[in-house]
Image 1 (cartoon, rainbow, N blue to C red):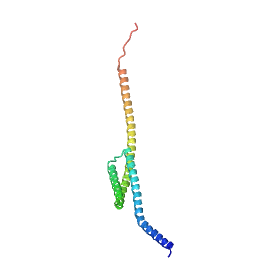
Image 2: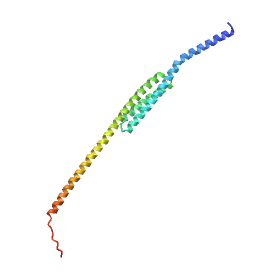
Image 3: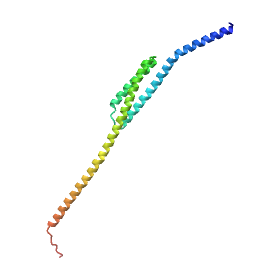
Image 4: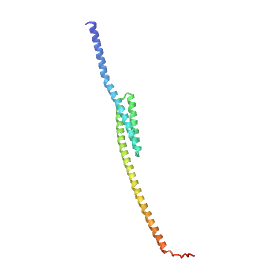
Length: 169
């Protein structure tokens, strides 16, 4: 073997060793990238849940329990991010899954509460309109009956009155 042959064998062995090291590191890098993507998607889901809760509150829904659940989801997400930073991808993934589950449930519940509040508000509006219309009709009827009663009394008192003679002198 010549010097060039030994050099090629050495380069080949180095390339082979580097590729083996890279193959061993790739699953860890892929797992890390997958965890980062999962954490980002959970963060987006928690943000959407917050927006849904805010919309439900604006519609007039009681969101106290939803805020508590949203706080739990944020705590789980924070724990997942802390676990990821310390290198514990399994715990990070489990906490992220828990946070995602809570966030999706909060989003669904907030949308349901918003729809319920909107229907309740609309029903209250139409009920107010109906009671107002009935109140106006009753007021006008009472006013008409009072007018009829005063008119009858006036005519009765007028017909019972004695005429007085007025002299032209």
